[in-house]
Amino acid sequence: MPEELVLLAVGDIAPDRDDPSTIFARVRNFLQSGDVVFGQLEAILSDRGSPLPQARLACRAQPEVAGSLKEAGFTVVSFASNHCMDLGREAFFDTINVLKDQGLAIVGVGANIQEARRPAIIESKGMRLAFLAYNSILPYGYWAEEDRPGCAPLRGHTLYEQIEHDQPGTPCRVHSFAHRGDLEAMVHDIEAAKKDADFVILSLHWGIHFIPAVIADYQREIAHVAIDHGADLILGHHAHILKGVEVYKGKVVFYSLCNFALDLRPLPEILSSPRHKEIEVLNPDWKPDPEYPSYFLPRDSRKTIVAKCVFAESRIKTVSFLPAYINPQSQPEILSPQDPRFGEVVEYMRQITVDQDLPAEFRVQGDEVVIGGGNA
Image 1 (cartoon, rainbow, N blue to C red):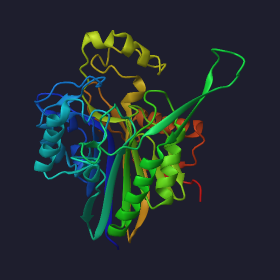
Image 2: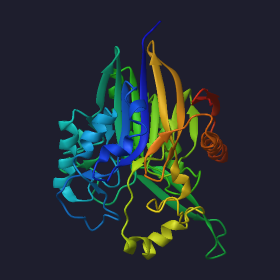
Image 3: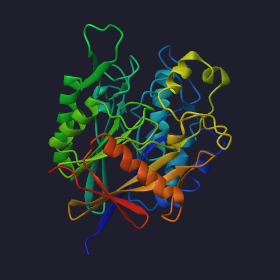
């Protein structure tokens, strides 16, 4: 029987507690069962730096988080997020260095644009996986350039079209599309990585946060172009809630894996600020919950998944996800099919996938949900 390589992937990670390893207590054994484990780091891991003026909500955690990620089983980490430069350059490089000190591969960031676009090649069981990471959620100055550190950008443009041109103030259509230069750079990176690896996995920090189901035009554009040019799997995150799944030309796009392991300790003045109140209205289920007193995000944010991809004989054998839930201690836990929340997560995934007319089919198989169907 041919040897199989198992990739596990999760969404946003930002532990902020005295012992960061405890946030993985309920999933550690499972994550360690993967041959390659990917996660998206939201927090800066440094004691240095102060928030930049354009940082909307600086996200800091202790450097010890890097060790907890290694201990939990992670092998590849993307730091290409809208928080990567929140605390300035010193903290940015501190984060990269502590991750590297733990032997973790880090993608999507660097001292310049060339480093930020460089893939991480992971070799396991005779197969080579190339990881690339890009960010579409970009405060000004956070993306890398020839002579500036930051993340690999995949910028998006937005156009607001008034539907009734003779009716001022009426609703508009929102169109978005990818930055041409960034899109061309991504294509170049994918094609180059494909020559040096058996599979290319794309990590994308993108999308519309908090609004249920909705996927922006630019996301579909980027996903399809990436797969057309050789990407084998797309892992999306940032939205802080789950989004649907698409199967395009036989390849799977996870538009958002949601949060996975975040500690949220916002200051009271932030929660009561007009800026936060404006964000709250994006999700109709954003209400205080006495069972989750420290978890200030919408209830949708508690539902999450672990993506699983099995590679064998130089092909992708299966892509699936495991339903999971965030408990009141902000710890993710994998659900068994006997748990009522298992069906809740599966049905939620079905609904948001159908809502956006995404071609994909879900089939429960044991404690996994196997993904099939889609467009040829």
